[in-house]
Length: 339
Image (cartoon, rainbow, N blue to C red; front, side):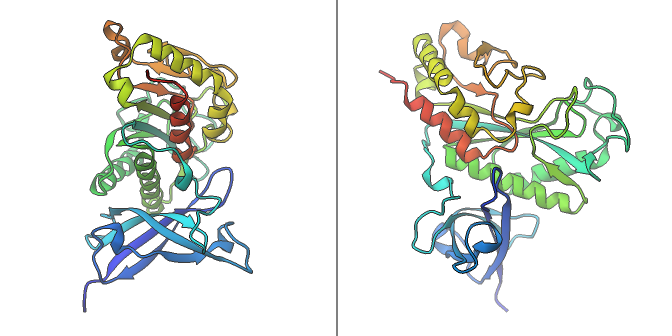
């Protein structure tokens, strides 16, 4: 019998304000070596809030594919855009319309909580664990537990096998909270990688009866929320920069403050309070090494007054759509002339 390649077509559904990942498996005998080897496919959009039952066909258009080590060497994950039968992008398909620039480099820091039985992993059944302090980059069962460490290490291996360019992983400030960082060139590539990394994490956690909680503030109190800090660097920022350009860029970010918040994920008012390493949602600020600012400016950026390198927008939240987040950053950058 010829080899059957398992192709897991995944896409974003039409739920709002946060879309869900969906997936189904296609089998074919031809090994995919390029997108040309991956045919378009269909699905029932009436079951994903993307069509009416009387006209339910939607189209999956492959846009990227990744080796799937969890299923074996003959398996791939196929990231898809959702299209209408006439070939135009579905209204829920943000990827097709975002701003992209391969010379702009993005690093997204995906924070999340691992949940078991409705509570963060490692929390007592009733009440709360010890206050924040020793959990960030923590070591030891009392700080991170056994299952969580096993999950995040396996997730890292799956992502690396898929070719996703992880920059690092670590335990975060709140107990049960973790982070992974992905770097890529161009908004579409970085966002694709984040969505596939989320898919791999969600699927891995099925085996442990653990839920991934991406909400930016899943519970109130003196606990850090979850962000998806957006590090970005244009070719101009890397090679030219300069203080005057930087200040104009910050003015543009301040002018578009509301537009950024609208693109940075739901319920951000619960997280951006001015506490727990955040700036208030109704304010804009920047500061060197300031994690309480909207934009953190690394020391390396201002070194020798060059104002060159990368910047970190700390406002995007963990449940945000990386396509929309990166696109909004690029839209604002485009407003500032480089000459």
